[in-house]
Length: 415
Image (cartoon, rainbow, N blue to C red; front, side, top):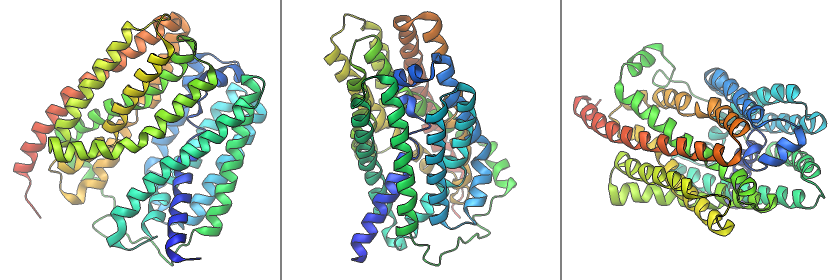
């Protein structure tokens, strides 16, 4: 096979692995009502599954990085994907809430323990250092395309069944088969290139680095901006059940809109980066503006109701999704402009990741409780109001981050 073609096929495979492996832990984002019906659980219990997964991720985040440094990417990716597929079959066969809690904890082992670091390493060793920017950019493009294809397959499978419950079971089983297929392809296509990770004195984890960073206000502020940005981005998925339960949109159509919002709009992420670089020339300034706009859009949902035209609601949800995608694609680049010495960047991103992804640990449970106790109409109004307020807080803190970054740069000695 032509080496260049094989390189692109391998990147596509990695993109598929990096996307589809997270479909099952986050399946509520696409088949929210169907999952609740199939399992016979409440909205709050649905949120507890994601909370269990997030807690597992936080616990395994650092030790997983250490282990990923010592194993071959091909086998780490293959075993992670295969294990996720087997858990899918177990989930489909049981659908018990108690067993599902254990499965979601195990998902954190199969998808977040060594998988992510191994995946990034696999992308890197495909080409030389001069190609890294292109390789990672192409990987993310493949990630979105692969996700769109896989999600279209699962949606077709769901629609082929005569009930939401039967459709959900079929979707879970299909996802499991996709993961097993990706695992087999990983073994066949990925090569280790005789590479072994080099751990230098520069990139070793040191507690002194952690202590230095924890004393930097800019790290904490940026971490909370990421928390706000990720919170409003990831929970834009509540438009899916809102469209079906409040606006009366068919479940399969709502799922199709979710796929477009999650994967089709992924193509807008680079546009957000271009706007930040070329127009605002400052990521923090861009985030302050776009988060404020997102906040206003979420508050605008208070004007919606059961009488709202479903097509307009779909358009509005995609507008919010587009803004969220352009915002989230740039949020981690705040670190590069914070005046933090290069040797501390990896540890700083680690701290920001732990704090930034905390919304998964309690937003879903809190929102689920609101829906269970307040009803759909009031519950969704509370959810969108909360997300609007979160976005506005993020916008304010982005301005604070911009000022702290400027101050930090003036104090940092170039090494």
